Image 1 (cartoon, rainbow, N blue to C red):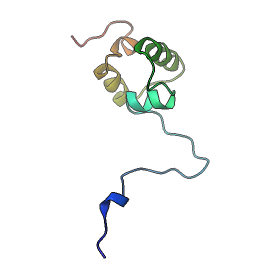
Image 2: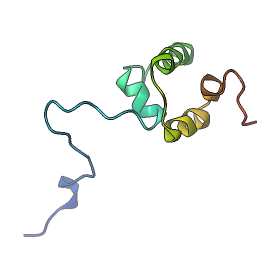
Image 3: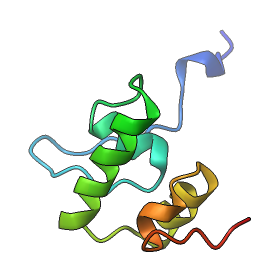
Image 4: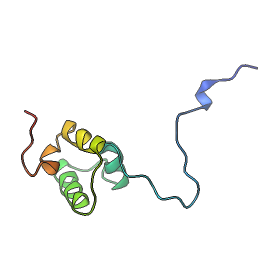
Length: 81
């Protein structure tokens, strides 16, 4: 019998009771905040609120800039044109 790779994935599983790791991308952050399918204004407000209490990783900052939320991490000045 051959092994079918459809039954395998690259998911990382955490032990029960372990805290979730900090988000590393905008998509992960939006999913953790349950905001994947809301309007952009609501997403921006929620991300800004999250940033008040958390320090984003360098990867999350890059992701936020790529997704158009750079003004939230750059103090209102998005350095990317």
